[in-house]
Length: 159
Image 1 (tube, rainbow, N blue to C red):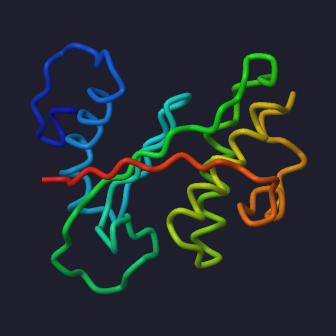
Image 2 (image 1 turned 135 degrees about the vertical axis):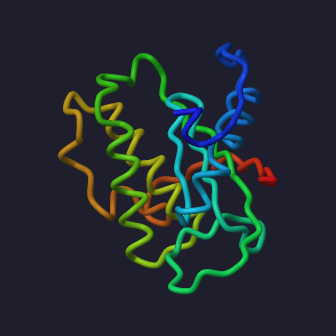
């Protein structure tokens, strides 16, 4: 894949979250020439969004016109889930993706969409089922869930 996107990387796996983010951002750059945005799930390290810069965030809403874009990335840490709360890791990424897309389709802003995905992943991790049967729009609505301290996303410019 690296040869296909034209990015030279050292053939050593990243050893830190910062290195992982920089590699993911570098790999996203050529893909963003043909994609509107890119979502990279990072398991317990959260999620990285890459795409068009819009008011300090990544624009997730589709655009019909192709315009010259300034690209950026946002890293959102995962919500804390203790080992005792974790019942099943299968399906957490799928749950995240489904809730993120539901937020996009409902016209929510980027922070809300990501929070919906993070809540869905946390619910999935605490369920014995890969996709929790209690997942609904209300169960992942950041405005309707119990008070949550949301981590601040990290902003990265994409060259």
